[in-house]
Length: 508
Image 1 (spheres, rainbow, N blue to C red):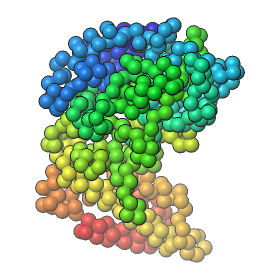
Image 2: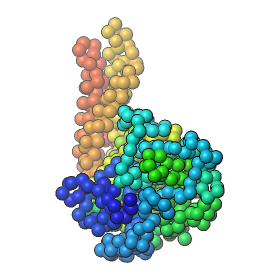
Image 3: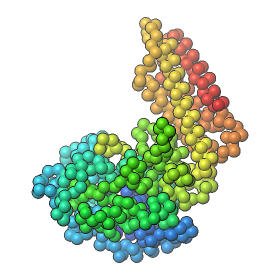
Image 4: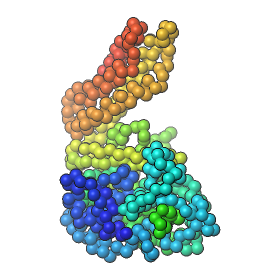
């Protein structure tokens, strides 16, 4: 199978029909393809591959003006480029393979950790190896994959493979680095949030997320444009210049070789070991990922830059004010670098998501799509949005206090006072509150895109304030029993205090 000519990328066309297309087909049919049809981790991996191919084919764009004009020539440039490099995109067979190392063998010939590994380990959703069984009830069974599925899983695994113990393998006489240990693949470091601008079709989406050389030089440094991994494949684990290109340059890092893999001819097993080490952003001194969001934290007066990470407990919209920051004047802080392509007053659709992991185990995929109104990319817009989130969090705290007050007043059936409401009650109330707030996040986005209205009516007169008030009162009502006189009195007092507290929060 060849990834250039054979269909393996799941997409949805303009009519809403699902199908697969080849790497070349994405660009040839891109105007008629609505979007990718994949999980969040696979979307990130595919976007990185498509961007790498597009930027290598254009050898640019050089600057913003060139970026603004290159869309019309993008498809033809990529088709010509892929004709020259098609041999590097073979999935199986002898010779160079896509993201695999020819001549890879298990160290010492042992058929254990590194050898005889099932290829189903490439799919994070399957209960293979140390993956949980949350989404897979067939753990232990032998699963097969089509070549199309195998290609997609291989790409996503190289981008998101979690850290941990791994088999030692030999390649051209050299043992794999790490002595049996591996670090996170570059897309998983910090369980980072990845964000991409969405266009009207898949080709436009790819174009909107291309970076121009002038920007890359400003963010990554001189000489860090680089080449994709297939153009400069390392010949050994000590091939320093090729490894530097792969791990420290913009194009080199887009499609990583974080694991040393060779898929056996039966397509059921593979040789698996540690691959190249990709220095992470921050303490390790690595470059920032183009689609990541960098935030600044202050601890005891010391400023520290970190990538924004995914949270399974905190919905993505509560971090949108960080992701939507366009300017990078604050020593590199801000959202995805592709936002630099856009005018400040542009409305934009933004996809954000990724894979969350902990202790070397993938936990879950997270993704959201937001429509950012015109003006949201301006500093004033993001600050208004951030303030709206902050007020929602303070309403949530007021709700928790109201539940404590109710528990204190209601007591139990014997009339004794109990200051601690059960954790399950607080959790249920807050879940209700945040779910209702999320349903109305459009009101907050509208406020961020129209700063003048907030200045005119104040937060207290905003639709967002009304939503939060209703959500908090409804959550309180749902978790507070009122079947006895004591409970009813306690509820009335708690509700009255909650109303007063919310009103004061929005007068501040």
